Length: 72
Length: 247
Image (tube, rainbow over all chains, first blue to last red; front, side):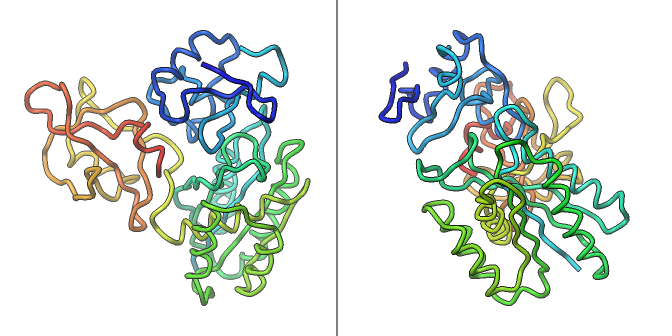
């Protein structure tokens, strides 16, 4: 579900349109925190796509918490 | 006269979002008796490793109808506000445009569109702002937020970019309402199907969680898609958020 990319960041392998995968990933994460309303893009609230700590990239997103902790 | 105000890069991972600051600015503009603010739009900009952004690289823009004599007060207020309220480590930028004095909106719109697909520089932004005679200022950090602030104005001017901040509150019975009732809401100018056709009349609409509108042809448009798996008599459903992502 994740890879460490060329920048040493934890990047979601599902890209930016794996809605089910992003829900599953968030369900397994104890660090999930909903982003502000205007930045939520998934219909399921608890989704990595709606997480405050996801950082969008051209093809997917990285998890900012990976840099701060051992990740989720 | 009508002005557009756009801000960008005001947050960090733990702070309030740029949208919250835009909302506060819009409210305080009215509280100060300077004018009447309109809805806030969120504009997605280019996502690229060379661009420093917190998590999504979007800017926030709103319009206001003001008396000419308050323009400088508003710019001063907005500048102080960004210095005071922007998060530690952010690079806030502010752009204010007076629409009836703007001679080449096409240049601003082109800049906005370019900012969605390429890396632009602060120098390019300042050069264009100076050429057009519009207010553009940085208020901390690297000031990189000026690029998004200028681009956001251009995209708002295009009339066809962005989602409106905030969910639409609709009175509904069992999650159902009608197209007419949605059209009657002050926050909604029009209901359209995803393919672009205007939808009118008593058709029943099934509402999803926290539906929102998008900016199309300068209007706040509530998008609907044909209802799937719904009971008989339900014609439409509000457009899922994941389909609004591209706006």
